[in-house]
Every structure is written in structure tokens, then in C-alpha cells.
Length: 254
Image 1 (cartoon, helix red, strand yellow):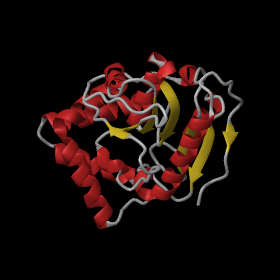
Image 2 (cartoon, rainbow, N blue to C red; image 1 turned 120 degrees about the vertical axis):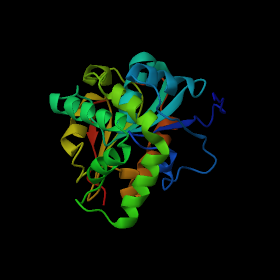
Image 3 (cartoon, rainbow, N blue to C red; image 1 turned 90 degrees about the horizontal axis):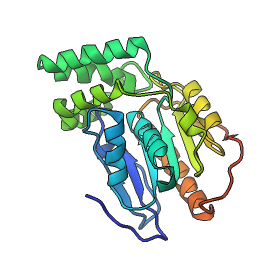
């Protein structure tokens, strides 16, 4: 459903990663009274997912995306740069898919088609955490979230992954405040990926969160909350047409 929000409080649209839902952001705290919207990723290509994002709210907004959700935000930037007042991306990759990724996605889709969605959830679980064997409670939390997303949406998300493109050129056109977050122990999208993104986005702030893995909002919600609060301050203080400077790299967050 599309919502309108007061111009003094631009809406923040939270875009989850693959096999993630709104519970991904449940530990993140934004300024009181700030409008926050959550979307689901159900379309089978990145362009259609970007349209899901753009149609979720009327007017300008701040996009916050993790992993696949960040890729969708990149495509929204390509399609409607004037709509983005701010951009926060984390645990992601702006490059085109690699051959090994295509093969992995195809294999996972085949398992789901054979009724083995639970096996796919178990395969993806270990890559979400900074340790090979995450605590039982954390692993079960991930399983609940992934199963809530379900096999049908998972297959659409896998199909969408194959439509990804290199978006570095798009990022260079960004003209809104931006923050790029990475976990120092993210095995899926390591810090180097995020340095590339931060160098591409004019004026972007880069924060590396020590000890965190792929699910940054769970591993370090305080760091994510602080980064978003800082971004929203920059959004409020930045005129829409203000020029941007070269990327600034912040020190690692504890």
C-alpha cells in the first residue's frame, strides 16, 4: 500500500535481503515518530522489485537495503534518482553476478522445486553469521524468518538475482546523502565490496562494523541504528540540489 508522509519527516523504506522479512529490522531503532515502511520482495526480476520499492510510498524517501534489498535500491536509484533523499546499504555487492553464483542459485532453485526448501534454508544459514556454527537461538531465529518468507517468494528472489547488473556507474550518479555499512566478518559480502561502493557514491560514508557478519541489523543493531540516525540528520540538513564531495571513509565501529 502506498502511503503519504509529512514533508518534514521523509519516510524510511526498509528493503530486506533474500529470505528476510521485516523482522530483519526489529532491533534497529530510528528517531521517535519517524515514518518507517517495510516492503517484501516478491517479483522475479530486479527491475520489478525496484518498482515495488518506488510504488510503496508517494514522493521522496530514504531507502535502506541489505544484500538483495540494497541491489533493489541501486536499481531504484537508476530509475528515479530524484525520489531518493538518502541511501543506506549494507552487506551487499554492486558488481554483476559471478558464474559460481549463477550455478549456486540454479542449484537452490532446483532443490526448492523438489520440495526441499528446508535444505536451502540450512545451506544459506551458515553464511549469515560471523561464525561457522552460530548459537542455536540465532540459527532458529533465522530459520523462522526464512520459512516465513517461504519457498514461492524464495524462487522469485533467486530468479531476480540472475537479473542483477553491475551498478557502479549508477552509483556515481547519486546526489543524496549515503552511508555504506559492512560487517568485518561478512563471508558473503566482505568489506572490500563496500569500499568499492563507497568510492563510487559521491560523499558516501563508509562504516565497517567489527565482528559482524552478513545480518548486520541482528549482529550490531546499535551500529546500524546510529548510522541511520546520522544519515537522517544529513538528509534533513542537505538541500536537494546540493553538490556532493568525494567519498569519506569513517573509522570502524565497535
